[in-house]
Amino acid sequence: METRRDIFQAIADPTRRAILLLIASQAMTPNAIADHFHSSRQAVSKHIKILSECDLLKQEQMGREIYYQLNPIRMKEIDNWIQKFRELWDDRFSQLDSLLLTLKNK
Image (cartoon, rainbow, N blue to C red; front, side, top):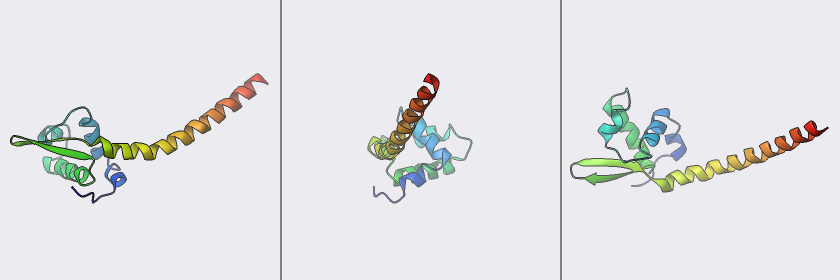
Protein backbone atom coordinates (compact mmCIF):
# COMPACT_ATOMS: atom_id res chain seq x y z
CA MET A 1 0.00 0.00 0.00
CA GLU A 2 1.32 3.42 -0.92
CA THR A 3 2.11 5.69 2.01
CA ARG A 4 -0.20 8.67 1.59
CA ARG A 5 -0.21 10.24 5.03
CA ASP A 6 2.42 11.67 7.32
CA ILE A 7 3.26 9.16 10.02
CA PHE A 8 3.48 11.82 12.74
CA GLN A 9 0.15 13.30 11.76
CA ALA A 10 -1.32 9.81 12.12
CA ILE A 11 0.04 9.27 15.64
CA ALA A 12 -0.99 12.76 16.75
CA ASP A 13 -4.48 11.45 17.47
CA PRO A 14 -4.87 9.80 20.91
CA THR A 15 -7.31 7.17 19.60
CA ARG A 16 -4.86 6.08 16.93
CA ARG A 17 -2.05 5.88 19.50
CA ALA A 18 -4.35 3.75 21.67
CA ILE A 19 -5.04 1.45 18.71
CA LEU A 20 -1.31 1.04 18.15
CA LEU A 21 -0.78 0.15 21.81
CA LEU A 22 -3.70 -2.26 21.71
CA ILE A 23 -2.41 -4.26 18.76
CA ALA A 24 1.26 -4.07 19.73
CA SER A 25 1.13 -7.49 21.35
CA GLN A 26 -1.30 -9.31 19.05
CA ALA A 27 -3.07 -8.96 15.73
CA MET A 28 -6.75 -8.06 16.01
CA THR A 29 -9.81 -7.76 13.81
CA PRO A 30 -11.45 -4.36 13.36
CA ASN A 31 -14.41 -5.48 15.50
CA ALA A 32 -12.12 -6.62 18.30
CA ILE A 33 -10.30 -3.29 18.17
CA ALA A 34 -13.59 -1.35 18.16
CA ASP A 35 -14.78 -3.22 21.27
CA HIS A 36 -12.11 -1.36 23.28
CA PHE A 37 -13.43 2.11 22.42
CA HIS A 38 -16.55 4.10 23.20
CA SER A 39 -16.88 5.38 19.65
CA SER A 40 -18.69 3.83 16.71
CA ARG A 41 -17.17 1.01 14.69
CA GLN A 42 -17.16 3.36 11.70
CA ALA A 43 -15.06 5.90 13.61
CA VAL A 44 -12.60 3.19 14.66
CA SER A 45 -12.50 1.92 11.08
CA LYS A 46 -11.57 5.41 9.92
CA HIS A 47 -8.68 5.48 12.40
CA ILE A 48 -7.54 2.04 11.22
CA LYS A 49 -7.69 3.26 7.62
CA ILE A 50 -5.48 6.25 8.41
CA LEU A 51 -2.95 4.05 10.25
CA SER A 52 -2.97 1.64 7.31
CA GLU A 53 -2.52 4.42 4.77
CA CYS A 54 0.69 5.53 6.45
CA ASP A 55 1.77 1.89 6.70
CA LEU A 56 1.80 1.70 10.50
CA LEU A 57 -0.54 -1.29 10.30
CA LYS A 58 -0.26 -4.40 8.19
CA GLN A 59 -3.30 -6.48 7.41
CA GLU A 60 -3.58 -10.20 6.91
CA GLN A 61 -6.62 -12.05 5.64
CA MET A 62 -7.45 -15.23 7.59
CA GLY A 63 -10.56 -16.83 6.21
CA ARG A 64 -13.30 -14.21 6.26
CA GLU A 65 -11.55 -12.03 8.83
CA ILE A 66 -8.94 -9.33 8.37
CA TYR A 67 -6.39 -9.03 11.15
CA TYR A 68 -4.36 -5.89 11.74
CA GLN A 69 -0.93 -5.91 13.26
CA LEU A 70 1.79 -3.37 13.91
CA ASN A 71 4.34 -2.72 11.19
CA PRO A 72 7.60 -2.67 13.18
CA ILE A 73 9.60 -1.16 10.33
CA ARG A 74 7.47 2.00 10.29
CA MET A 75 7.43 2.10 14.09
CA LYS A 76 11.23 2.00 14.00
CA GLU A 77 11.18 5.18 11.88
CA ILE A 78 9.31 6.92 14.69
CA ASP A 79 11.75 5.54 17.24
CA ASN A 80 14.75 6.72 15.20
CA TRP A 81 13.33 10.25 15.09
CA ILE A 82 12.61 10.25 18.83
CA GLN A 83 16.06 8.84 19.58
CA LYS A 84 17.65 12.18 18.67
CA PHE A 85 15.66 13.85 21.42
CA ARG A 86 16.46 11.04 23.86
CA GLU A 87 20.16 11.62 23.28
CA LEU A 88 19.79 15.37 23.70
CA TRP A 89 17.93 15.01 27.00
CA ASP A 90 20.29 12.31 28.28
CA ASP A 91 23.19 14.67 27.63
CA ARG A 92 21.43 17.54 29.40
CA PHE A 93 20.54 15.39 32.40
CA SER A 94 24.15 14.20 32.62
CA GLN A 95 25.31 17.81 32.65
CA LEU A 96 22.78 18.62 35.36
CA ASP A 97 23.91 15.61 37.43
CA SER A 98 27.51 16.78 37.15
CA LEU A 99 26.58 20.31 38.19
CA LEU A 100 24.54 19.09 41.17
CA LEU A 101 27.35 16.79 42.25
CA THR A 102 29.83 19.66 42.01
CA LEU A 103 27.56 21.93 44.06
CA LYS A 104 27.00 19.21 46.66
CA ASN A 105 30.73 18.65 47.09
CA LYS A 106 31.46 22.36 47.69
